[in-house]
Length: 242
View 1 (cartoon, rainbow, N blue to C red):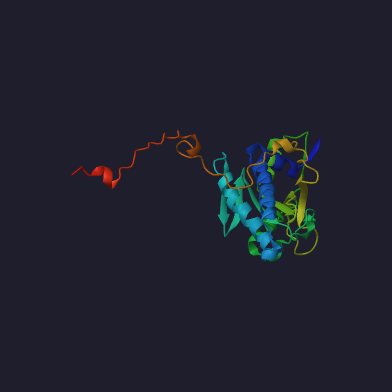
View 2 (cartoon, helix red, strand yellow; view 1 turned 90 degrees about the horizontal axis):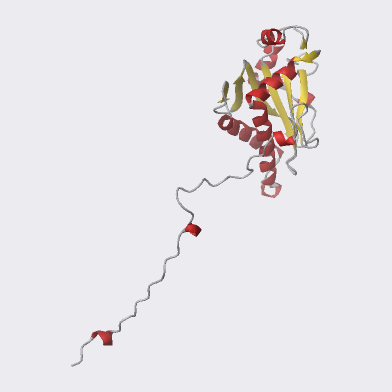
């Protein structure tokens, strides 16, 4: 049996808990930002895209904290996840529709975005694994060659529906695809992760802030005190008879 290197990467990220958290988180962020998107108040697609990327990055650092063998941090405001030797980053695709071609990603817009694709492109190794071989040893030997993995996503500012792809980026400055390999890992239109379980495997968290539990009983649970009525004494009552 022949399998792709990317498939094995996604399985490892899935076992580590990274894939499930990132898919849930990206979907939540799109829905929350679509709910509060107000063009009448000056919101536009640029603001929507910036909010999406920053929200995902900031929340991922918090939500991935504590996963064994997973280290998430911000590098110049960009999310970087290190897991099992891989370096994972996320980017929003241009536009504000659900289905945007992954071929539209451009790694050349910054040196930081281009660095990973360039490293991945400095080898001619194949991206398939022969099932008749020792897959573990073959896979581990390829990690240093293709260690940069990218999540890219797109979504609607009206509905909050999103599509998420994962892939191995390549240096495309001389033309060709920006990917060595890529695949869709979530689409709200399809409602599932292809190969990684049904929608029920990606639990939704709250899409709005949750008030932390109070340290004591709620006000409504406190006993209602019995009113005490004391007759009011008038000035005349307080004076003695002459």
